[in-house]
Image (tube, rainbow, N blue to C red; front, side):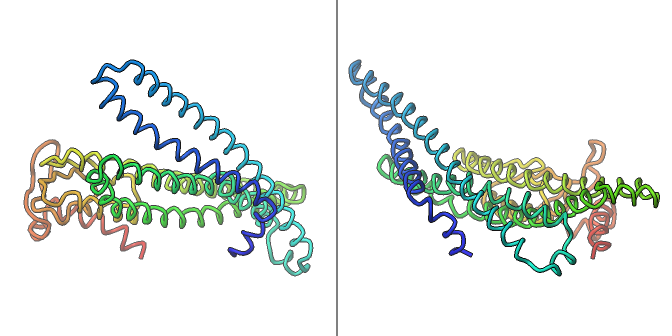
Length: 345
């Protein structure tokens, strides 16, 4: 697979090299600004050196302009390469389909083939034109930033790098979840394409009307479309909650508060993403008094004390095992949450 992907980019290796150079130069310029700002705050302003201040500010402005120009050039060139690669890939796929036997087309739905050409290659287009350059740019920027951090203050750099495993764990878990969602989404899109091709062609319309299946087909399309919409929401929410959680964790660690309040921290996440976030939050809560407000009981099972509220009144209080043993309100909620899982299995 790697060789096949590399072969697609080989004719454009000159342009790709230019893109890489632009990325490296842009990242290098980006880490110069903190040093200029340091000299402004530590030297130019305290010593009332107007000439140095003007030079440093002009340097920061020049760097911002240069970075913007390089970014435009990088984006244009990467899109040119990406579109040429996509053209080559589409042509190769179409030629490959033309060489397949008739048996393949008799057992494969036309809509599914159309979906592979339109949707799947479209997904690859995003990777080629945006994701790949973003990965290279981000890696280059991170390396340059780490070097700059150590040059500015090695202690702060070490503290920042200590947080990296937590963030990597969250990103990996969320990435795996989004990968599974995307695979399911591609299947649903293929089903929708097949349904549209089969039911909205001339023969499909005639068959549907003659057999009175128009309403049934419309209901089926709505179900598939609703499923696709749900998958899109799950995918985007997983990414947004990952970023929000990372920022919240970083702010909390920097402030180092003795009391941590988590208000529905995982309410919009699916189960697997929730577990990844909870692992990070468990590390964050170590050694702190933590108040967790939640409707998902899975997030409070390990709490030292669980307080059950009803209409603003405390109706129960105790550990998870104690409240289960009482068999009252909390136990009923646990049974309620367990019922969907049992029925699904």
